[in-house]
Length: 218
Picture 1 (cartoon, rainbow, N blue to C red):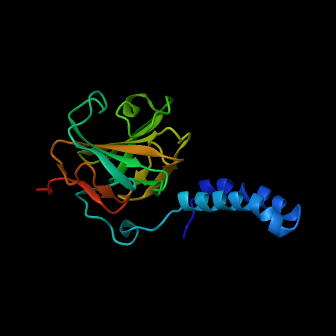
Picture 2: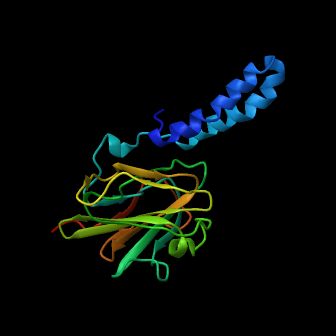
Picture 3: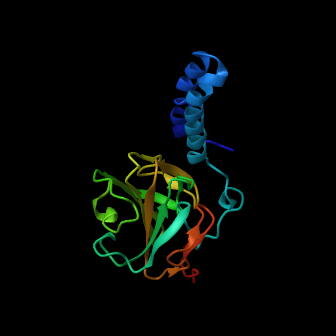
């Protein structure tokens, strides 16, 4: 399985003390020191895994908005108070646990017309106030007269957001565009004319689950 390149320092780091512990004495004695480091390295490989999804093989329908991440839907429909950008939006928020795939994908296609980063707190991502106060990256995608806004928001363990796109770039629906390290949430905002297709508590898969749908053109 593919591993995101941001994960290799976290995977290889614990292997050094594990190797030193193994070389320091006989393996039967050193293994009790080495095993926790090996376990940590294995978990990091699991955390930074980057599996292929259906959008990587078959282009999604042009009216579909896909989940940007794996996780559980926290909000589906009316936006939380004071969370949505200025305008009339619907909100879908996905909470990522520490065992979910943390590679993030673009929920829609189009040109990145706005990009911003805001420092903040590191509250648990499942708490409502995390959308207001936590560190986050926000992107605006535009395709013709259609606009989708989405945010990467860190959690209590996530201490860094990786965003691999910026203003002027074009993204395809489901295209990999970054990740968040260790527990977080993603918010997607779509206009009122879109139909929300997920419900609170539903598990979703990044790049596969349709979370909203634009009305068919014409």
